[in-house]
Structures are given as structure tokens and as C-alpha cells.
Length: 242
Image: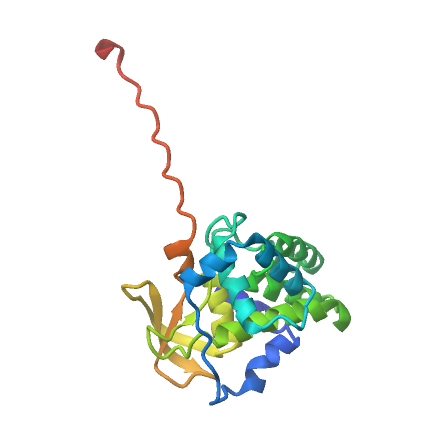
């Protein structure tokens, strides 16, 4: 994941790429409360959630950050959710690393229809679009979606403690956030706390000046669908024992 993100960094020149520099980690930043159980309950309302999806996909400026948090974290509780988004590599990512930008663009758009809040797929699809020289108006909605997801994640914590960890729904989203927003260039170690929060020993970061960084990517592990146990293979009984 680290190598792939660095590979496409030069391709992504949208507003999302410059957002971290513009915010300067403002001191007046508010913390957006994220209660997974409340989100689970609200996300069960299919009418409400469907409306949020429609607003998000059309880049409706009326949708607020609290609604985006319900949309993003609530995705884990939707019927179409099939487990951690890391389980299957985004086709846009795979094709982009092969230099097949047109296919990466098309496959990324198709993947987003089924996984609209995949920050990782938005990142790689925008990268493909920029590599192809797509006009700004064609990238505008995707850029807005990418930016608002990053902004929402940024406001879920400060990353300084386990209890104030930034919150994401997949490890791939975690690395996008770490590099594009916090500017993490290098870390020495990664530890998993007892509550499944990641702690990184930060060596170098442009927008994070503390030694330890906490990011919580445990939502799928705690609340997502559990994999069905593998069926045991039938055991043949030797003829003399039948």
C-alpha cells in the first residue's frame, strides 16, 4: 500500500491533494463525536441512508459533516457491505499501478457505484482522471466527495491518544489519510492496542508533530459482518470400519 500511494502521488493534483496544506491543522478545530452504536441505529433507516447516498453522489453542498459521518461509518452496517474494504483490492488501484489509466478510470467509477464511500477508490480514480487530463468539471463531484470524507475523518479526533484516535473504516483509507492529510512520510513501528486501535511511532510527518499517532480502523472488526466458518471437509471412513 505504501509503495502504491507514493506511485500515484504525482498524478493527483486536485484540491484534495492540497487540502492538508490549506488547513494548517487549525487550532480551533472541533472534534466530531462518533458513536458507532448510534450510527448503527440511524444507518438502519434505509430511507434516510438512501437520501444521504444520493446527496453524497451528487455533491449536494447542503449535506453536513455529521451526515457524512453517518454515511461513511454507517456503510459498515449496510446490507451490501461484504466485510472490510481491504478484502478486495480496488480495481482502479490495480490498473493504475499497471499504467492503464483509462481502464482505471472506468473501473473506479463502476466500483464506486457499489462502494460509494470508498475513500481509497476515490483517490485512485481521481489519480487516473488527472493522468488522463480529464477536465475539472468532470472531476468536480469526485473531488468534493474525496475532500469531504477526508475533512470528516480529520475532525473525528486529534490522533494523540487511544481515546482521541482518528477513525476510518479500512486500513487502505487509513494510509490515504495518513499520507495525504497528516503528511506521514515515515514511521518506525506499529502496535495494536487491546481495543484494536493502531499506534504508530512517527519518524517524520509534515502535519503531525507528535511521536505517537493513534488511528482507529477497528469498526469492521467490532461491528461488521462476521465471516462464516469454513465448512469442514468430509472424512472418508475406511471400508473396514464401516
